[in-house]
Amino acid sequence: MRRKLPQLLLVLLLIVGPYSVFAHYSGIRKKFKACKIELNGVNFTVDPRIELFHTIEVISGIPLVNFIGLDYKEKIQANFAPFKDHPLFAFLKQNPVYGKLFKTIDAPIWFLIHLDNDLEWRKDVPYSEKENPKLDSLRLMMKDFAAKSGYAGFFNRNLDLYKISLESLTYNLPDFDEKNRLLDYCGVKDKSAVQFNVIVNFLGWGNFGPRIFKGNQAELYAIIAPEKMAIRVPTFDVAALYRLIWHEFAHSFANPAIERANARFEELNYLWPPVKESMKAQAYSSWESVVKEHLTEAIACRMAAKKFGEDAADLNFVRLQKAKDWIYLNPLIKALKYYESNRNTYPDLDSFIPKIFECLKAVKQHDIDLWLAEKEPLKKPDLSSIPEIGAIYSRKHILFILPTGEKDKDADLKLKDFISKFKNQVSALKDAKTVDDTTALKMDLSPYNLSVWGTPSGNRFLKEHLAELPVGIYDDKIIGENVYNGTGYGMLIGWVNPVNPENVMAVYTAQNPANLVDFNRIMNGSGNYHIFRNFVTIKYGDFKRQASVWLAK
Picture 1 (tube, one colour):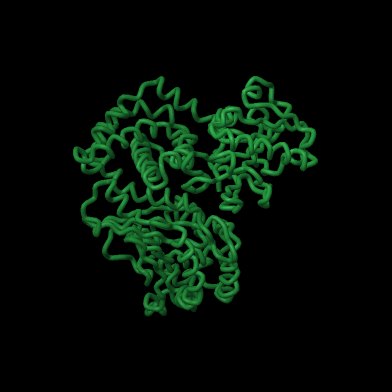
Picture 2 (cartoon, rainbow, N blue to C red; picture 1 turned 90 degrees about the vertical axis):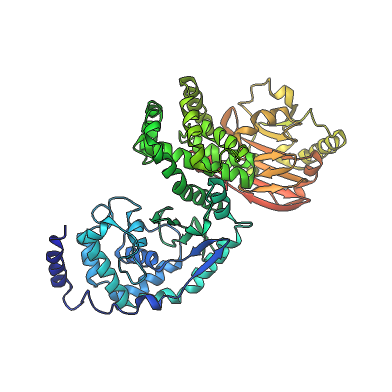
């Protein structure tokens, strides 16, 4: 490798011509203005190295730039149009970023975090690719392009966008103390030795979690791309962000713990074949990597349970992973609950690894068969979209299903009186039939569009089918994309008929029947779910499919 370097640099000099790849290096770093918010030990930043790299992708027309409609992209194209003839772009044409310069989608990120803001190789950490002459040429050309195009000035002129995005993101993370929570969970004593960094990647596609270790020090990264845009500002999936932080940062503690006992875990590689193909499709191509990923994800699920509650964690985190064949989360989560209850015996994750081994060793074939069978129902219904709440008003053959088991009899009577009036006020509902829940459970419901009323405990039909929906209604909380604690909530839900997905089901439910009376005073009908309290809309949103699983968003 080293012998090729002088030859390649000579070729570069011939290509570059009047553009000297060694010109104008000084002063790049000091020109970048810092853009950072620190939140309980976690640094939220916009990184000039990453923004520069993706700026180059935009100019080059590399399609892995994300699909978010930011005018930031147009600013980049307009600002840097005069520099499209820089030799960097001829070099990238001859050496495609993905496939030639980098073999994996996350490799550019690892490359960038091993540079400083001057685009020099960091001297404080090793990086094997420093010896790669093509990557070093890329580094040199990026540096020259940044200097010649005045990239630092462009970066600084967009500080308003960067700052408002960071402020919006951190504003949506109330009670954020994930560094301390995760380090406490893993039993890490010296918290100052671990640096948590969340980098907003405006133009990138996907999220990444690289890690750098320097002796006893660790730099942990969660590099996140926006999900969509609102009023010209990128927005982020907060649930996905939490999961990314917990999962990627937990790797730094789960991986070494597994590695120290790897010989024992290799004894369990007979557990690999049942999930081998699906895990390989998710880029986990060895039994060791599957064990590490499962333990790390189990920790993330337990962090979710500690933050949002067991019900919300099961609904919005565990369910998603089980549908992707992460079947060994079942014993691992159970084991981690035991760990949580016995921290005096197991002060840190390392000390608990023998129990992790035992819980996996105890897995039998009938457990695997049961867990694999649980996957398919989690992916239903197999549709491209879910009907909106108001879709039932355009349908015929409507069947009202009323509760028979409400505990609050006065509220139940008030609700049924309201339903009768409501049904007669809406022309589309006047001819609808009405049955009680016990009768509905004995009927062939496939010809009908269903209008289901009452609380989950009061309506037996709803109780039987509620687990199929990506929301939760409990006495003390409502769960959608978030947890809404308290009482007095009602929820409207658009779904499909459970026995015939070609027909629709509208659910009118609440913590108490009285919470639904006169709900039509609220503007409603759009979206897939609508949470309200005291005639005030708290949240309405849609159900989106992720890894074939419907989630509230």
